[in-house]
Image (tube, rainbow, N blue to C red; front, side, top):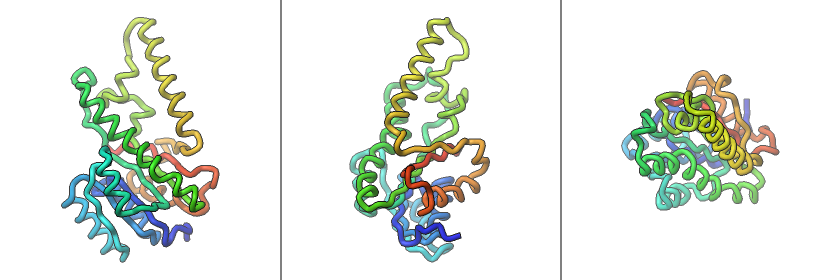
Length: 228
């Protein structure tokens, strides 16, 4: 099936391995001009070479930390006008939220939320001006389903506590979700985690989200998928 994205420019983050690499490969097979980004240069360059060999597509590789202004500038310096942006990160390591320092929280927020938001902010106006744009945000299923070992999710969902504590937690979570909904309503449509059982299926869903026939009312879709 021709998805109508041949010749479009795609910027795929966290693409040195795992789901990000699989998405980059799937997009390359659709004939996009591909730029991949990750922190670890040797893994990234190896992934780029493998994708290029498998698809015949020229792949640009940028080793950068997208939680930093310099890293985002480097990525957009290599792909200044992406038609397709795939935000993806492996997220923080599993652990107990009681053990996390403030720096751990800030790093996790930068990695999973603030960095991707900045990438969207820096690219969405150009997409709008060109009349075509697709943004795919890949996150962990723990943002929807609490998991004990994933502190960022579990910390807002205590299983025990006083009624007042539970009410405060529900209020805090509802406030966060309301703010997120306002920020993303025009951009994001969720695909249920139950619809994406495997990395293979998720990766092959990615180009469909980016196709020319995807709903023009939604310039972004979120793939909710566990990568751990």
